[in-house]
Image (cartoon, rainbow, N blue to C red; front, side, top):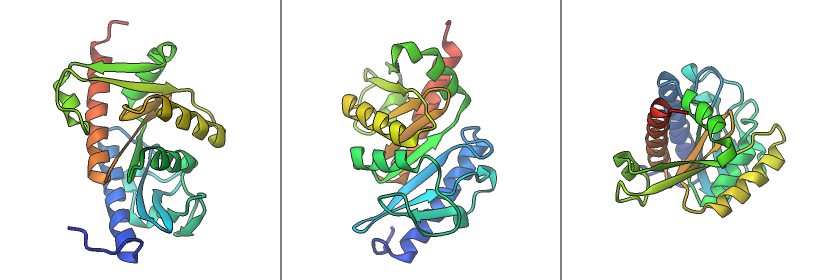
Length: 212
């Protein structure tokens, strides 16, 4: 059990260790190769602090020293380097979903399917037993909609697109950036990690069985 006080140095250190472990694990599974992917977890709400991966670090070698702490405006308050360019997206998801952890992967299947289904605006996943691994889903008869958002290098504009999409699809457990990757979240890192595992599994199943 985590007994560290909110916003304590101990809590940040624990989260940094967990985030670096997740990053190395996702690299090993082919979901965050090279410097791709970024991962975050809320350290405290008041004052708001977010632990997030530093930009352009090799996820196969990710260490806790490469995890930064930023404030609600994305400013670094602890650590060295720059936060991921997509820190604004993490902050937006945390606010819109009241999430505690946000994980972003760059898998082969998320890239393929986000392009293949771009005209539809999303990917529908239904009737798979693995859907029951998503928070609040209790039957394989569930239909999950993963919206697809056009990617952009303008992070402010992209964050607004993410906000609109999350408001329009309040029941979705994640979204895809076109030709980019998957975003998902959770009430804690364990739930967010589980959501990545479930959604990446289902995206691969759909990709491998697609006749398009």
